[in-house]
Length: 376
Image (tube, rainbow, N blue to C red; front, side):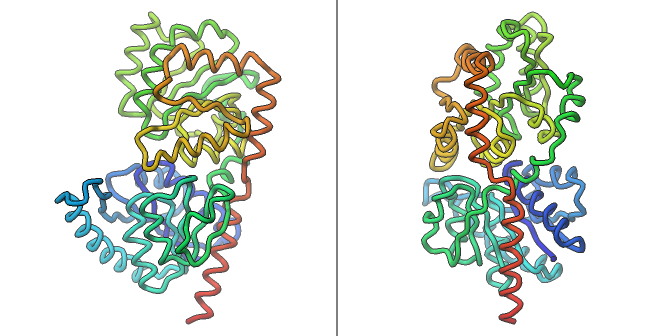
């Protein structure tokens, strides 16, 4: 199959596309891909590091401001129209069998252009609350795939909605824990807690970790790995040294964790935001978690994501307004020092996982491509 992927802004919008691409190659070894993103997001670098033979093209687009009368919104409409034209040109040249959108503003012009050209299209909604771009696209695309059971009804104008889970989960199934331990210089019996704030890092989580760093010696049998996000690394690492006197022996501070699947496979507990890819990763591996939803997202969708797991007992939801170094440390200690609770959380986390998600998406792609060929 010839597939165009589009998604951007954060890693959470890119990794599911790569997982679908990997599944396509497994099922259809002659598959060819093109990725259309923006030049300002993380997608270009992530795609380049993926190991997939996937050329990258950029379309420039921004989101709407909440103030409808804003001049910026007029500019956004013009960028959207230019983006549609650019996307149509790229699509005519590549001649895809289908186009897949996995989130972010860039999906708008790309998937709209594909639908207008009569190309089979699939949008993947990663969150429990639908984003503005996907709600707009749902009336045009062939299929909307959702990540959470019971959310099919959030797209009333869609032609078809299917539950697939998040394809990122599939990438985690065969993650090598031994390589995760080795990359961190740890032995396989290490009890690892991974703390990150999404692909770009999170200031609030970093602040809490600065406060928490002097306390980690109170859990001597636990190893902490903390990804600050590249923009925050130098300042955060320096502040940890100042607060703790030196970086504690059982704490590693990194700007970014490039081999996240392997590191997560090695972990006993994850502290993170509640983005859709994060949810897919931890539930695919059955890892207990402490989720700190970002309050700065549309429709507060991360809290809805987090509650879906904590309500089932697989996670603890900790709101940012309640976050501090001591509160976070106490929550970590309660889980890591209580094996019965840890086992229960791991079991409940695994129950929420959809490990064959990428295969389900590819089956739907095969269906819409076949249907499109019959119409021609």
